[in-house]
Amino acid sequence: RYRSLKSLAYLHPTRFALDRRDSRILGVPESRRVFVLRRSAYSASHDRGRNGIDDDLAREIVRVLSTQGIVYISSEDNRQDDLATTRALSRRPELLHHLLAVASLVVTDGASVAEESVVLGTFALFISDFAQERSYLSRIEDSYGGLQQYRPTKRNEWLEQLRHLLDDIADVE
Image (cartoon, rainbow, N blue to C red; front, side):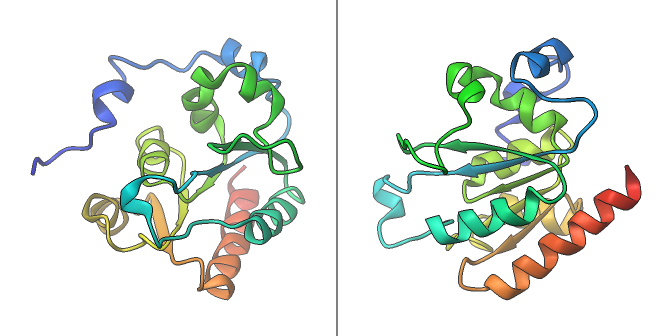
């Protein structure tokens, strides 16, 4: 164990600098809120029997977020439907961290992306069967408040929290 976050190795301000030109390459408008939905494939051996954001949940998240801004989708699955990775991001996947940095909110079932979002200063909702099982995410949640964790089965709880977060974002921006 070590008392740090692995993402600081590549996202620390001495290593990562946000370049607004990269956001423009992705088509991120300066005049609208941007949200990111990031879905993991859940295909690793340690993911066996676990779930994250399924298609129905993803569509509900997109529906709720799109009322307040533009939703960029990033998916590890090679999809060709309405939940496929946003075209601009599929062309330049190396710019995901720039997108996370300019987003108003990130919703993800991937622990690494949840951590990266917080390190970049963007609040994250982590929705996964792994919620509350990753000690580093619990430390972030308890000590810094940069994320919240929910299991997918707690749909009503995290949907209510998502709506509250959107209200808070609207009040701040």
